[in-house]
Figure (cartoon, rainbow, N blue to C red):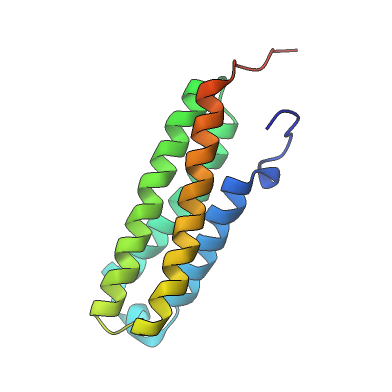
Length: 127
């Protein structure tokens, strides 16, 4: 992460954003678009991932950044739960779920890696 100057360079943010875009696509389908509570919860959870990684990136030190990435991870798990719920409600076809799960797990793995990095390295020097 050393030398990262823009949030878009972080793989954890990129994969969280991809997950958000997938959730946005699901939310536009006829079923979810009429189920306002489901749609809004899915979209809010999905947007929380990249949003919290971005906010943490703008914070002072690694410990605080890691706290925001943990929040993002929690939101990514919530997105997975909404995808499973979407299958139960027949908004998402059962055979679509594995691809949605893979996207979620990729985002979670990247977030976990970022947390490990942040916890194992000293805070950057202020200029």
